[in-house]
Image (cartoon, rainbow, N blue to C red):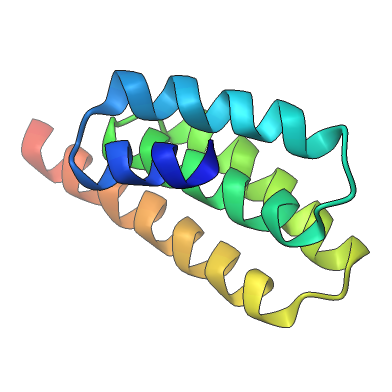
Length: 99
């Protein structure tokens, strides 16, 4: 499901991406697939960032960071920080457009 959600995300089919990624994350939480516990919330965060839902994006970045810390995943922590930067830049650009 994670790969399917990623394809939908890359093709900007956000509704199907959200459905597939959220389902994938639920399945992943029930199993010991450590890599997907980091990657899937990162993808969900990107989905929400691209659809201007900063609060949800940050929440999933926090979730990804939790799993990165739990599994000592330094690369994942870097991806979390990159994701946060993208959210902040999106918010900054949105604020500029309003003024």
